[in-house]
Amino acid sequence: DSGVTQTPKHLITATGQRVTLRCSPRSGDLSVYWYQQSLDQGLQFLIQYYNGEERAKGNILERFSAQQFPDLHSELNLSSLELGDSALYFCASSVEAGANVLTFGAGSRLTVL
Amino acid sequence: AQSVTQPDIHITVSEGASLELRCNYSYGATPYLFWYVQSPGQGLQLLLKYFSGDTLVQGIKGFEAEFKRSQSSFNLRKPSVHWSDAAEYFCAVQDSGAGSYQLTFGKGTKLSVIP
Image (tube, rainbow over all chains, first blue to last red):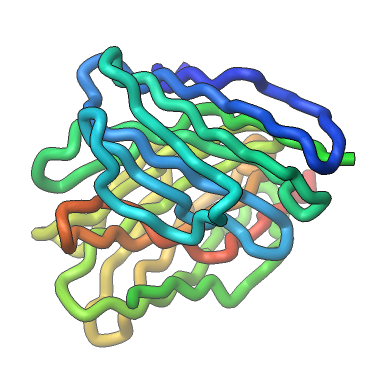
């Protein structure tokens, strides 16, 4: 157990729907990162939050959004889902001080039918 | 922008044989480098990291990696592979600019182990 908790583990939904993925970081970690893993694109950085504020943005679609709450958990919202959004979504957390190690959760597998 | 290349998509080795997984990076400054392993259906587990100092770094599960600045490489090695090492391995470089420590990953190398 890495200490980073992601729910749900698996999610099956239809095109056009909206889903929310949840991430609880390791105790003491202030930063949360979201990554998407797909067969064709590999691991792609989506977005990072630090202590409730957006810190960096990667290849995140406009249909996707995220936030980090005061208790530091984070949610990734995916809307108007398309078949191509089927992927494994990882959350990682870090202390964000000096040389920095990201600890990953087990991921949420999204299937869009 | 930084990038990572793992030239081998799939490698098959016999149990007990030695292993080397290649990784080349492109980054303007001194890189922070990582190797992660992903077993089927699992998340990413950190094997080892390089921040500075000794260019040969030791990790978990008997893995080591060597940073070679002149070759922009950070290859992962293990002297004797075990069947449980079958997994996918990802090399990553860390961007410490603009206050974000996001990782840029290579495409991964899938390792199969023959008993």
